[in-house]
Image 1 (cartoon, rainbow, N blue to C red):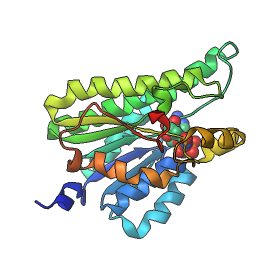
Image 2 (tube, rainbow, N blue to C red):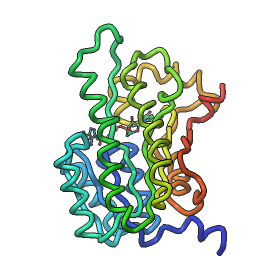
Image 3 (cartoon, protein in one colour):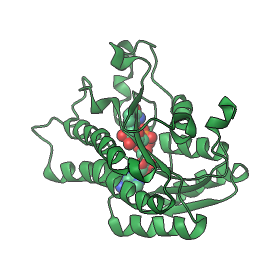
Image 4 (cartoon, rainbow, N blue to C red):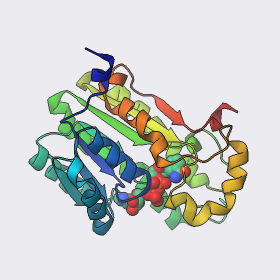
Amino acid sequence: MSIYDLFNIQGCTALITGAGRGIGRVIAYTMAEAGCMVALLGLHRENLEKVAGELGGKCEKILVLPADVSRRDEIDASFQQVESTFGRLDICINNAGVSQQVPAEDISEADWERIIDVNLKGVFLCCQAAARLMIPKKSGTIINIGSISASAVNVPQKQAVYNASKAGVVMLSRSLAVEWAPHGIRVNSLSPGYIETEMTRSTMSHLFPVWRELIPMERLGKPDDLRGALLYLASDASVYMTGHDMIVDGGYMAR
Ligand SMILES: NC(=O)c1ccc[n+]([C@@H]2O[C@H](COP(=O)([O-])OP(=O)(O)OC[C@H]3O[C@@H](n4cnc5c(N)ncnc54)[C@H](O)[C@@H]3O)[C@@H](O)[C@H]2O)c1
């Protein structure tokens, strides 16, 4: 087998959550370009259909699944649709997430619940639904999008709940990796540093110059900077890697 064959995921099926924009959109592109059939899951049908339209020529089959990752009924129905359409799920990439910057002493209980529900419970529900399809096939790869905020308290923004949710994602991934290794399922997290997307642009663009000073590579990342790591984690190139948190951050965490 050539070294390039290890990265071959042609003909696999991949589900991506939060696929309608930002990092999720680039994940969908990456999987489609690598020859996967893709299921695009997210809150807004129109965004998902726009991405599906863009992917058109690249992809043999595309499934659009409008659903909220924090709702078990919607997630179970979506994964059932994946099974009935594709017959199997090889790669599940849990990317949907929300962030909020509020001092911890002011954050409301409702906001705590919303962030934990989407970022942590949502990842768990999708991992569980994915594993139920993967266990009978004795194979599968799950990639959960964490963050450098799982292991560092980013400054100057105040986002204790987001940080806690992402630390939960990394530890959940490690725990599931150990539980599901005997079933042939690998679970890793991919933790980006600061990436320029609507999430960061909408409320934190005034902090970009501050962050740049803290990043050894002196620039924010682009969603495209994650493509290589995604293909590596999704493919047999990482066949002996599970329970790992892969950080892609322009050197931020190295300081
Ligand atoms: N942008 C960054 O700097 C950065 C850094 C580290 C980690 N991340 C993580 O990467 C992921 C993607 O971030 P992004 O920057 O592309 O953000 P984004 O806000 O541009 O995209 C997030 C996507 O998730 C979807 N989503 C939100 N709640 C959902 C729900 N309940 N159910 C289904 N879909 C839902 C949104 O509709 C959107 O399409 C997030 O988990 C985020 O925490 C981002």
